[in-house]
Image (tube, rainbow, N blue to C red; front, side, top):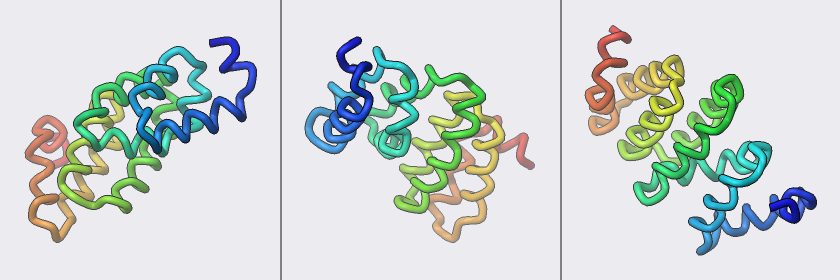
Length: 138
């Protein structure tokens, strides 16, 4: 792993290629062993991957290695950008689960407020999947 960490630009580019190609699982494994700076560098990609049932658990665990203050500062804006890119119920559910896993209750409450305000009937049902937060938000 030292070889990977000694050449940040090359490693970062390789990880991005793998996250966008057919080596996503490999990239997630490699990220577990690298400094969290690499996780932050590919955060947008990871948040996008977290929508997939195939990768959601691994992405949550990986983002869970970030210091809580970093996660609280970095993850919610990436979630809002992802919701703009894929505004559907599955995205709301998976990203809500990500925020819940990371203990970002304020961001989860905001996601629930956005879902409640949605004109899409499927998205407006999202708060029902987070009953504790839904009750607190009333």
